[in-house]
Length: 123
Length: 107
Image 1 (tube, rainbow over the protein chains, first blue to last red):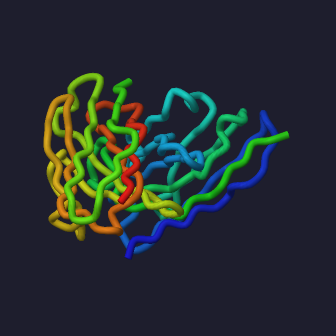
Image 2: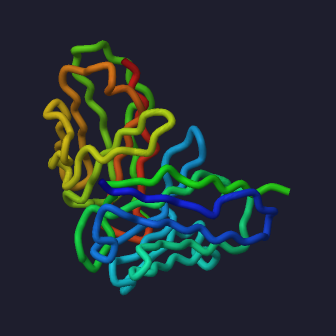
């Protein structure tokens, strides 16, 4: 069974930083692209950032570009999101999400989600 | 950025009936379209990918159709567990991968 466990969320003031982590199990982590998707309660999901299985390609939403950095450590089955210059609009539940396709040089769609870690940006 | 627009915003349907949800893309995405169901308090669940292919374990009453810019998710013989919010998502062009704003299905 695929499991994705996020950590690192919390309360941070505007302008602050956080680093989210996700550990995957139940699948060959190094074979799949991975993503961060966030959701404000009552709103739709928003793709934040994604990275291919070999870290060869990655991308981020315009709203976080130049502030958030996605990375992964396949040896530790881990995905990370470094979030800098946080603003009130970044408050959301952040999900670690597994891509559906195996060992592809692109990003596609999402077949497994973690339970999320809550990020609250407030003074 | 490809903008995904879903309609209607809310759909009220009785058990046993058919529900038809629509998704429109601002430019062609071919068949690079997925559908998700989200029940309150849970993460989204993949239903359909490639516009028409059901994900593992998804009941046959869920079907997807369309290509290019117009897509439809049809749920036949609605059951009580089908309530929730449904989202479409394109994966033709990125960044960014984009979702529609959702259709709330009330049983």
